[in-house]
Image (cartoon, rainbow, N blue to C red; front, side, top):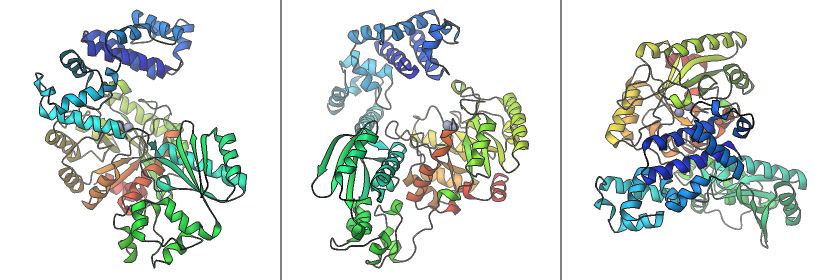
Length: 551
Ligand SMILES: [Zn+2]
Ligand SMILES: [Zn+2]
């Protein structure tokens, strides 16, 4: 059993205890235990085998014996028992963003609500506000949370879809000796996709089927007589392969890349055959339009008037301004991060570990920051081609002040500020809080501004106009967090921010070496927001970045 599976059982147990109304002490012990197990560097089984589990900080005798039970039986007997006592489906309500276990417990005890559908009925019949302390605002949040939970189903993250699309098209291309390329929303770098779409120059659906089965363990393969193959790829999702030929490749590529709104608006006649996309667009007197722009947001008009943007490209990225090392909750050392950055041909990076306010992540106080600077200086000496900024990802407290004193911030080369907790305060207060950070003269970047998790946690709400105005005025940069689970800012806000005169940084927020490789997803979001390299600080040469930091 994996650590995360053990942790999940413990945290479900904590939620159920909380729902049941048990003491906070016991609930917290299990929550902390779950967290501790999730963060272990070695399999918890090994700790048990070697009798070392009890030595782990945060795991007492009771918890240790629970964990042993779980590992031995493959399930958590106490949890099973509790699930009999109170409905396990209550956990699906806990999964709704914006509702805590305590509130779920009250819905259950006071209204008998056990699942999402029942909760929805109660909202419709306005029964929740009958409870003490539950107001219209919270009901509104709950409704939004349910809606959000619904939309979440069945989508594939771009972080999963794009690598899979590349792997499968490469395998088919090599095996059949033909052209095979990703099309559809995955080619347009949409945040999530319903299907992975590929275009293949072939009529040989049998050979394609063989590759899908042998190489990708595909199931539910259906060959549709016209021109396509459908399949399910384990751990990925559904795949659709469109078959084409050399003569129609360009027009088919446009048609199957979509979006359908773009294709409809183009009015590309069915009869058109074009060997390349450029040739197909030419038949309409248009220049080639980049896939990320094909969303029917004015791109056809812009193409007609020859004012398409010169979109930023991955190769223009010169650095990465937000990553974590072993000093806080990262897995790679400063040296390892530096070496990988050089492989990526970066000219500069910023080591931005957490600040001490984020205790769960082993955040740094002023003293450890100074120790870290020493290590960074040593690494710098070994890699003169790379500039390493001493940075920190500093918590923004509830009152808008920062987790370090100004004189500590002043010692840093670059300050990234983040709101990791307490984001569900009223919009006006939250806006004041982030503007407080933006107006701090030491703050350079606001990380993952909305705090959303794609399809899981909705974005925090700000008065964006005011946030953008403050950022533009102070030269504070807003991040596109390139982690495909975040993609934060989302594209529509990126476009508005840049419109308001704000600059953007595309950062990996890597917590290990592989985490540095997500940059292209952030670039995809920037391109979908029509951005050029000019708008993005980490495409700028070093001297210009230093000028901005010294502003
Ligand atoms: Zn963060
Ligand atoms: Zn971070």
